[in-house]
Length: 119
Image (cartoon, rainbow, N blue to C red):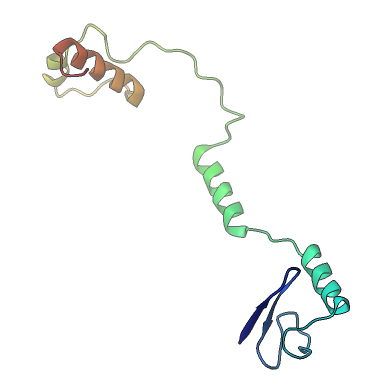
C-alpha cells in the first residue's frame, strides 16, 4: 500500500485497485485529465453524520421542544428565607415540591455567609 500526496489529490495505490475504482496508471503520477473526474466525484458527494442526527433527535425527545415550553413565571421560593439551617436539618419531612438546585444553592450560600463559612 502506498500513499502519495500532491497539492490537489491524495491517492492510495494498493497494487491492483485504486480508491476510486480505476486502475492505477504507474505509481502516483496522474494527469490533469484523471484528476478532474475524481475531484468532480468528491465535490458531488456529501457527508451526512447520521450519528449526530440521531443524537440530536434523542436529545430533543429527552429535553422536549423548547419552543413549546411556556416561559417560566417567577415563583415564590419553596424554602422560606426565615428558615434556618438547623430548622432545615431538624425534620425528616419532605418538602411539598422539589426544590430547584439554584434555589437550594442560594439558600446554603446565604447561611454560610451568615455563619462566616463562605467568603
